Length: 286
Image 1 (cartoon, rainbow, N blue to C red):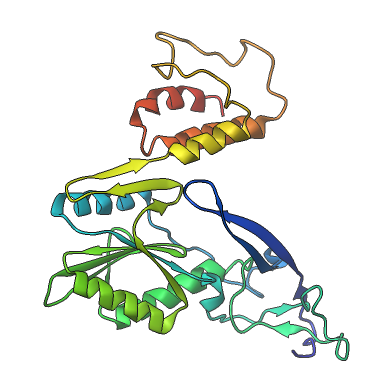
Image 2: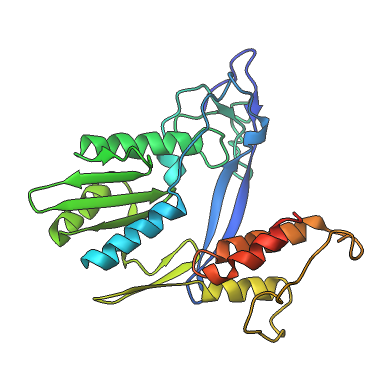
Protein backbone atom coordinates (compact mmCIF):
# COMPACT_ATOMS: atom_id res chain seq x y z
CA UNK A 1 0.00 0.00 0.00
CA UNK A 2 1.64 3.23 -1.17
CA UNK A 3 0.80 6.79 -2.05
CA UNK A 4 0.28 7.22 -5.77
CA UNK A 5 3.40 8.48 -7.52
CA UNK A 6 2.94 11.78 -9.32
CA UNK A 7 2.07 11.46 -13.03
CA UNK A 8 1.14 7.79 -12.54
CA UNK A 9 -2.38 6.44 -13.02
CA UNK A 10 -4.16 3.64 -11.26
CA UNK A 11 -6.18 0.86 -12.83
CA UNK A 12 -9.37 -0.49 -11.32
CA UNK A 13 -10.25 -4.04 -10.28
CA UNK A 14 -13.34 -6.16 -9.69
CA UNK A 15 -14.39 -9.54 -8.35
CA UNK A 16 -15.27 -12.26 -10.86
CA UNK A 17 -17.27 -15.34 -9.88
CA UNK A 18 -17.21 -18.62 -11.77
CA UNK A 19 -18.64 -22.12 -11.43
CA UNK A 20 -16.21 -24.94 -12.32
CA UNK A 21 -17.67 -28.21 -13.65
CA UNK A 22 -16.47 -31.80 -13.77
CA UNK A 23 -16.32 -33.91 -16.93
CA UNK A 24 -19.86 -35.21 -16.29
CA UNK A 25 -21.25 -31.67 -16.00
CA UNK A 26 -21.63 -31.70 -12.20
CA UNK A 27 -20.44 -28.71 -10.16
CA UNK A 28 -16.82 -29.06 -9.03
CA UNK A 29 -16.38 -25.83 -7.05
CA UNK A 30 -17.21 -22.14 -6.90
CA UNK A 31 -14.43 -19.62 -7.51
CA UNK A 32 -14.05 -15.95 -6.66
CA UNK A 33 -11.14 -14.10 -8.25
CA UNK A 34 -9.85 -10.54 -8.03
CA UNK A 35 -9.29 -9.31 -11.59
CA UNK A 36 -7.48 -6.13 -12.63
CA UNK A 37 -9.08 -3.98 -15.31
CA UNK A 38 -6.25 -4.40 -17.78
CA UNK A 39 -8.08 -2.56 -20.54
CA UNK A 40 -7.08 0.68 -18.76
CA UNK A 41 -3.36 -0.10 -19.09
CA UNK A 42 -1.19 1.92 -21.47
CA UNK A 43 1.48 0.28 -23.60
CA UNK A 44 5.00 1.34 -22.65
CA UNK A 45 3.86 2.76 -19.31
CA UNK A 46 2.48 -0.08 -17.22
CA UNK A 47 2.94 -3.01 -19.58
CA UNK A 48 5.33 -4.12 -22.32
CA UNK A 49 5.24 -7.64 -23.74
CA UNK A 50 1.98 -9.57 -23.64
CA UNK A 51 2.53 -12.46 -26.04
CA UNK A 52 2.31 -15.88 -24.42
CA UNK A 53 2.32 -19.23 -26.18
CA UNK A 54 0.03 -22.11 -25.33
CA UNK A 55 0.36 -25.67 -26.54
CA UNK A 56 -1.26 -26.23 -29.91
CA UNK A 57 -3.87 -28.95 -30.18
CA UNK A 58 -1.63 -30.67 -32.74
CA UNK A 59 1.10 -30.94 -30.11
CA UNK A 60 -1.32 -32.28 -27.49
CA UNK A 61 -2.65 -34.90 -29.91
CA UNK A 62 0.89 -35.92 -30.87
CA UNK A 63 1.86 -36.43 -27.22
CA UNK A 64 -1.28 -38.53 -26.65
CA UNK A 65 -0.46 -40.60 -29.77
CA UNK A 66 3.07 -41.18 -28.45
CA UNK A 67 1.65 -42.28 -25.11
CA UNK A 68 -0.68 -44.75 -26.83
CA UNK A 69 2.01 -46.11 -29.17
CA UNK A 70 4.72 -46.49 -26.54
CA UNK A 71 2.51 -47.51 -23.63
CA UNK A 72 3.31 -44.40 -21.59
CA UNK A 73 0.95 -43.29 -18.86
CA UNK A 74 -0.46 -39.77 -19.21
CA UNK A 75 -0.83 -37.64 -16.10
CA UNK A 76 -2.38 -34.24 -15.44
CA UNK A 77 -1.61 -31.51 -12.95
CA UNK A 78 -3.29 -28.19 -12.30
CA UNK A 79 -1.37 -25.18 -10.99
CA UNK A 80 -3.58 -23.02 -8.79
CA UNK A 81 -3.80 -19.29 -9.51
CA UNK A 82 -1.08 -19.42 -12.17
CA UNK A 83 -1.06 -15.74 -13.11
CA UNK A 84 -0.41 -14.76 -9.50
CA UNK A 85 3.04 -16.37 -9.69
CA UNK A 86 4.41 -14.05 -12.37
CA UNK A 87 6.81 -11.29 -11.31
CA UNK A 88 6.05 -7.81 -12.64
CA UNK A 89 8.88 -5.81 -14.19
CA UNK A 90 6.77 -2.67 -14.71
CA UNK A 91 5.31 -0.21 -12.20
CA UNK A 92 1.61 -1.02 -11.89
CA UNK A 93 -0.67 0.79 -9.44
CA UNK A 94 -4.17 -0.49 -8.71
CA UNK A 95 -7.11 0.78 -6.69
CA UNK A 96 -7.90 -1.01 -3.45
CA UNK A 97 -10.21 -4.04 -4.02
CA UNK A 98 -13.98 -3.43 -3.62
CA UNK A 99 -15.09 -4.44 -0.14
CA UNK A 100 -11.51 -4.39 1.19
CA UNK A 101 -10.73 -0.68 1.23
CA UNK A 102 -8.61 0.29 4.23
CA UNK A 103 -10.82 2.85 5.99
CA UNK A 104 -7.84 4.36 7.83
CA UNK A 105 -5.89 4.85 4.57
CA UNK A 106 -8.47 5.17 1.79
CA UNK A 107 -6.24 7.41 -0.36
CA UNK A 108 -3.46 4.84 -0.72
CA UNK A 109 -3.20 2.50 -3.72
CA UNK A 110 -1.80 -0.99 -4.32
CA UNK A 111 1.64 -1.22 -5.90
CA UNK A 112 1.62 -4.64 -7.57
CA UNK A 113 4.74 -6.75 -7.27
CA UNK A 114 3.14 -9.91 -8.66
CA UNK A 115 0.82 -10.29 -11.64
CA UNK A 116 -2.95 -10.38 -11.29
CA UNK A 117 -5.57 -11.87 -13.56
CA UNK A 118 -6.66 -9.25 -16.07
CA UNK A 119 -3.26 -7.60 -16.48
CA UNK A 120 -2.08 -7.62 -20.07
CA UNK A 121 1.36 -8.96 -19.17
CA UNK A 122 0.11 -11.65 -16.73
CA UNK A 123 0.23 -14.62 -19.18
CA UNK A 124 3.71 -13.66 -20.34
CA UNK A 125 4.98 -13.28 -16.77
CA UNK A 126 3.65 -16.74 -15.85
CA UNK A 127 5.23 -18.45 -18.86
CA UNK A 128 8.56 -16.81 -18.07
CA UNK A 129 8.31 -17.97 -14.46
CA UNK A 130 7.53 -21.62 -15.15
CA UNK A 131 9.85 -21.78 -18.17
CA UNK A 132 12.85 -20.54 -16.20
CA UNK A 133 12.06 -22.98 -13.38
CA UNK A 134 11.88 -25.96 -15.74
CA UNK A 135 15.12 -25.01 -17.53
CA UNK A 136 16.91 -24.72 -14.18
CA UNK A 137 15.54 -28.18 -13.35
CA UNK A 138 17.19 -29.73 -16.42
CA UNK A 139 14.42 -29.48 -19.02
CA UNK A 140 14.92 -28.29 -22.58
CA UNK A 141 12.41 -26.23 -24.54
CA UNK A 142 11.19 -27.71 -27.81
CA UNK A 143 12.15 -25.70 -30.90
CA UNK A 144 8.77 -26.55 -32.41
CA UNK A 145 6.53 -25.48 -29.53
CA UNK A 146 7.77 -23.38 -26.63
CA UNK A 147 5.08 -24.85 -24.35
CA UNK A 148 6.65 -28.31 -24.71
CA UNK A 149 9.54 -29.28 -22.41
CA UNK A 150 11.62 -32.46 -22.53
CA UNK A 151 14.11 -33.91 -20.04
CA UNK A 152 16.33 -36.93 -20.55
CA UNK A 153 17.34 -38.82 -17.42
CA UNK A 154 19.17 -42.04 -16.57
CA UNK A 155 15.82 -43.84 -16.66
CA UNK A 156 14.52 -42.42 -19.93
CA UNK A 157 12.59 -39.35 -21.00
CA UNK A 158 9.98 -37.06 -19.40
CA UNK A 159 7.73 -34.77 -21.44
CA UNK A 160 5.58 -31.94 -20.15
CA UNK A 161 3.05 -29.87 -22.11
CA UNK A 162 1.82 -26.56 -20.68
CA UNK A 163 -1.57 -25.06 -21.49
CA UNK A 164 -1.79 -22.05 -19.14
CA UNK A 165 -2.51 -23.77 -15.80
CA UNK A 166 -3.07 -27.31 -17.10
CA UNK A 167 -0.06 -29.61 -17.42
CA UNK A 168 0.15 -32.92 -19.27
CA UNK A 169 3.04 -35.09 -18.07
CA UNK A 170 4.18 -38.31 -19.70
CA UNK A 171 7.30 -40.38 -20.30
CA UNK A 172 8.73 -43.87 -20.13
CA UNK A 173 9.68 -43.67 -16.43
CA UNK A 174 7.04 -43.50 -13.72
CA UNK A 175 9.76 -42.67 -11.20
CA UNK A 176 10.78 -39.58 -13.17
CA UNK A 177 7.14 -38.51 -13.50
CA UNK A 178 6.75 -38.84 -9.72
CA UNK A 179 9.91 -36.75 -9.19
CA UNK A 180 8.59 -34.06 -11.56
CA UNK A 181 5.30 -33.85 -9.66
CA UNK A 182 7.27 -33.52 -6.43
CA UNK A 183 9.38 -30.78 -8.03
CA UNK A 184 6.29 -28.78 -8.98
CA UNK A 185 4.76 -29.11 -5.52
CA UNK A 186 7.90 -27.62 -3.99
CA UNK A 187 7.61 -24.46 -6.09
CA UNK A 188 3.90 -23.97 -6.83
CA UNK A 189 0.59 -24.80 -5.22
CA UNK A 190 -0.58 -27.63 -7.45
CA UNK A 191 -3.35 -30.18 -7.66
CA UNK A 192 -2.39 -33.67 -8.79
CA UNK A 193 -5.29 -34.89 -10.94
CA UNK A 194 -3.75 -38.32 -11.50
CA UNK A 195 -4.19 -39.95 -14.90
CA UNK A 196 -5.27 -37.68 -17.74
CA UNK A 197 -9.06 -37.90 -17.96
CA UNK A 198 -10.48 -34.48 -18.92
CA UNK A 199 -8.55 -31.77 -20.73
CA UNK A 200 -9.90 -28.62 -22.43
CA UNK A 201 -13.37 -30.12 -22.79
CA UNK A 202 -12.00 -33.42 -24.13
CA UNK A 203 -12.57 -36.67 -22.26
CA UNK A 204 -9.61 -39.08 -22.36
CA UNK A 205 -10.06 -42.78 -21.67
CA UNK A 206 -6.81 -44.73 -21.25
CA UNK A 207 -6.31 -48.48 -21.53
CA UNK A 208 -3.07 -50.50 -21.73
CA UNK A 209 -3.30 -50.60 -25.54
CA UNK A 210 -5.43 -47.65 -26.63
CA UNK A 211 -6.47 -44.12 -25.78
CA UNK A 212 -9.91 -42.76 -26.72
CA UNK A 213 -10.73 -39.07 -27.11
CA UNK A 214 -14.36 -38.00 -26.64
CA UNK A 215 -16.22 -34.69 -26.61
CA UNK A 216 -19.63 -36.06 -25.70
CA UNK A 217 -20.24 -33.77 -22.72
CA UNK A 218 -18.94 -30.77 -24.65
CA UNK A 219 -21.39 -31.52 -27.49
CA UNK A 220 -24.31 -32.00 -25.08
CA UNK A 221 -23.52 -28.69 -23.38
CA UNK A 222 -23.52 -26.86 -26.71
CA UNK A 223 -26.79 -28.48 -27.79
CA UNK A 224 -28.31 -27.35 -24.50
CA UNK A 225 -26.99 -23.79 -24.84
CA UNK A 226 -28.41 -23.37 -28.35
CA UNK A 227 -31.73 -25.12 -27.60
CA UNK A 228 -31.17 -28.17 -29.80
CA UNK A 229 -31.42 -31.02 -27.29
CA UNK A 230 -34.76 -32.14 -28.76
CA UNK A 231 -33.51 -32.38 -32.34
CA UNK A 232 -33.18 -35.79 -33.99
CA UNK A 233 -29.70 -36.95 -35.09
CA UNK A 234 -28.93 -37.92 -38.70
CA UNK A 235 -26.34 -40.34 -40.05
CA UNK A 236 -24.57 -37.76 -42.24
CA UNK A 237 -23.55 -34.25 -41.13
CA UNK A 238 -24.53 -32.56 -44.43
CA UNK A 239 -26.90 -33.36 -47.26
CA UNK A 240 -25.23 -34.60 -50.43
CA UNK A 241 -24.51 -31.95 -53.09
CA UNK A 242 -26.00 -29.20 -50.92
CA UNK A 243 -25.15 -25.67 -52.02
CA UNK A 244 -25.45 -22.82 -49.56
CA UNK A 245 -25.68 -19.15 -50.45
CA UNK A 246 -25.57 -15.99 -48.38
CA UNK A 247 -28.65 -14.56 -50.13
CA UNK A 248 -30.92 -17.59 -49.79
CA UNK A 249 -32.81 -16.18 -46.80
CA UNK A 250 -32.99 -13.29 -44.35
CA UNK A 251 -29.81 -12.31 -42.52
CA UNK A 252 -29.36 -13.58 -38.97
CA UNK A 253 -30.21 -10.89 -36.42
CA UNK A 254 -27.39 -11.75 -34.02
CA UNK A 255 -24.35 -12.77 -36.06
CA UNK A 256 -22.29 -13.52 -32.92
CA UNK A 257 -24.51 -16.54 -32.16
CA UNK A 258 -23.73 -17.99 -35.60
CA UNK A 259 -20.03 -17.38 -35.06
CA UNK A 260 -20.14 -19.10 -31.67
CA UNK A 261 -21.94 -22.14 -33.09
CA UNK A 262 -19.44 -22.48 -35.95
CA UNK A 263 -16.56 -21.99 -33.52
CA UNK A 264 -17.94 -24.76 -31.31
CA UNK A 265 -18.25 -27.04 -34.36
CA UNK A 266 -14.65 -26.29 -35.36
CA UNK A 267 -13.54 -27.36 -31.89
CA UNK A 268 -15.62 -30.54 -32.24
CA UNK A 269 -13.56 -31.62 -35.26
CA UNK A 270 -10.71 -32.44 -32.84
CA UNK A 271 -12.39 -35.77 -32.15
CA UNK A 272 -14.92 -35.78 -35.01
CA UNK A 273 -12.99 -35.38 -38.28
CA UNK A 274 -16.08 -36.63 -40.12
CA UNK A 275 -17.62 -33.19 -39.48
CA UNK A 276 -14.76 -31.34 -41.18
CA UNK A 277 -16.38 -30.89 -44.59
CA UNK A 278 -19.69 -29.67 -43.19
CA UNK A 279 -17.92 -27.30 -40.78
CA UNK A 280 -15.81 -26.02 -43.66
CA UNK A 281 -18.95 -25.20 -45.63
CA UNK A 282 -20.67 -23.23 -42.85
CA UNK A 283 -17.39 -21.49 -42.00
CA UNK A 284 -17.50 -19.77 -45.38
CA UNK A 285 -20.33 -17.54 -44.11
CA UNK A 286 -18.69 -16.27 -40.91
